[in-house]
Length: 156
Ligand code: SF4
Image 1 (cartoon, rainbow, N blue to C red):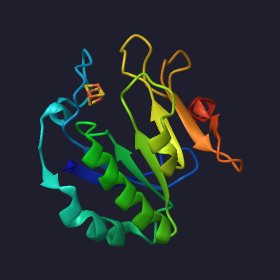
Image 2: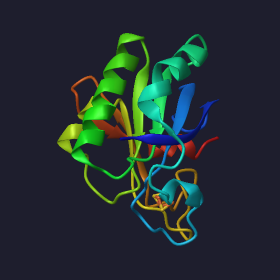
Image 3: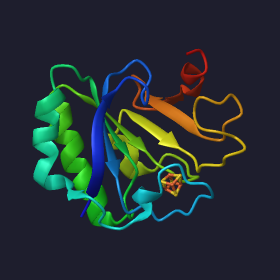
C-alpha cells in the first residue's frame, strides 16, 4: 500500500495550480544523486489511506490540484489506490497530477491524471525548470489527449 513521508501546499510542482503535494515512498529507482533518498525506502512514513481525506480537507479551500510525487513500488494495487484518490479529489473539484520517475510514454492507467510528469532524474540535465531537462510535464487537453507543457517551467 502507498505510504507518504510528508505533504505540503505548493505553487511550483504543477504550472498554474496550487497543489497539495504528497511525497510517496517506496521508489524503486536508484537515480545517482537522488534529491530525496528517503523516498527510496519501502513503506517509509505513514499509510496514505489513513490520512488522505484529512490532508485534502486541510488544504481544500486553497488548493486546485492534488500532486503525487512518486509512484511507490509501481504495483497494480497501488495503481488502484491512485484511482481511488484521484476520483475522490476530482469529486472535490481538484485536478490531479502524478510525478513519475520513469522514462516511459503516457500509459493507459495514467489517464486518470490531469497532469503527468515523466522522466528519470539526471543531474546533468536537471529537473523540469532546466531548459535542457530530459523530463516532461504533460497536461490533459479537451480531446483527452495530453500536451507537453514543460516550457511553462522555464519562464518563472
Ligand atoms: S525517481 Fe526521484 S526519488 Fe526515485 S531515486 Fe530517482 S530522484 Fe530519487
